[in-house]
Length: 374
Image 1: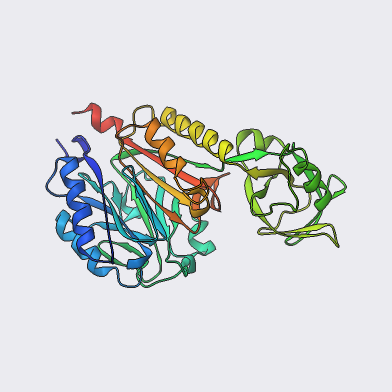
Image 2: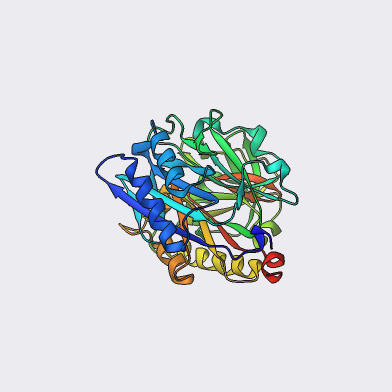
């Protein structure tokens, strides 16, 4: 019987304190080992809050020693969470321990691996690895300044290039992004645009088109809440029905030129839909996403990794992370680990996409072939 054919044992631990003490990593790992019913781990996912960001190595070593394991992967982040609780604005450690080496730091050596768990600091984002042929999922780490020494680590040590890519092995995985949008319009074709300036939609100025769509809301207010508004874009109108679209934020509404300055350029001939970030829609969309992933996995998940935007966390829901609460309600007692980041990564439309204001959810299940051979 191979190690991979044994039942997967997994659990999380969470510890917090007044300062960035490496002992917190020991406490988090020991709590996770006890819940999993194991004395050592093959792999540890370790997330530290930004208080650790500039000197995390002592905490990483403490986690490695407590788990008797050298494969410690993770990053620093503005906030972290497990199914137990979420923590922002304080020194804390979240750990997930695994009895199998689910995450391999040698992706080219893992036969059949199609997905790469990718953690990256903001300064490490570039098109060369984002555009790789492997489907990537994960999040953008960093401390409050978006940087920090050793903000990403694998094999129990910081990574100089600022990002890591880990192959999935001995485990099935289902991945999707949840945007949580309330649609304000049907698909409409871009008439004119220039780089990041969206000028006209269906021969109506972009500003007018957006304003008309927003006014369809019963609770529309003035001025336009640009921080909540998004434009979804795709190459065809049919793509929206298949959830195959990308998102751009609206940076500036130019009333003088009636154009909109966006975070991403949208070429002429593309199709767009105006959308509003909405708490009720976010909950409904995440619930649907979780159910769809369960069907894809064809079985109960063993654990979940969730990558959330800070704008989708407790600040968005008035003091509680309703996304985490919903996931716990859908999957009682399932280990969950995640962090609030500066961006999320998900495979969309046959390419790896960098997202904002979204959640990327990955559900992991015992590999069927291995499980059935026991």
